[in-house]
Image (cartoon, rainbow, N blue to C red):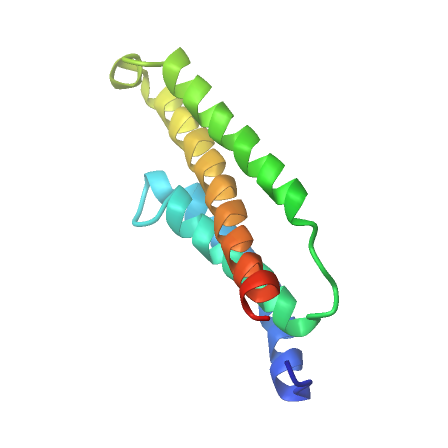
Amino acid sequence: MSKNTIVQTTAKILLPFIIVFGVYVTINGADSVGGGFQGGAVISAAFIVRWIISPDKDIDIRYMKTAERIFLLALVLMGMLFMGQSMGMSYITGRVWMLFTNVLIGIKVACGLTIIFYRFVFFESR
C-alpha cells in the first residue's frame, strides 16, 4: 500500500474516536441499539485503521485466535452456568449480566473480524 500522508494523518486522528465509539456501543447495548456484535465490529475497524496507518507493523494473529477461543469458551460456560436464570434476575443483576455478555461478545467479534481481515491481507493478497 502506498504511503499517503493525508490518509495516515486522518486515520491517526480518528483512531481514538473509533475505539471510544466501539466501547460505547458495546456497553450501551442493553439500553439502546447496538451491543456486543456491533461494538466488536467497530473495534475491529480500529484494528483495520491501525493497519492503514502502519502496514509494516504486524499483529501476531496467534494471540488473537487464542483470545477468541477463550472468550467463546467463557460465553458458553457463562450461558451454561446461568441457563434459565436470566429471566428471573433482579434489575441490577440483569444489567450486570447483559453488560458482561455484551463485553464478551464484543471482544470475541473484534478478534474474529480482525483475524479475517489480516488473513485476507497477509495470505490472500499475494
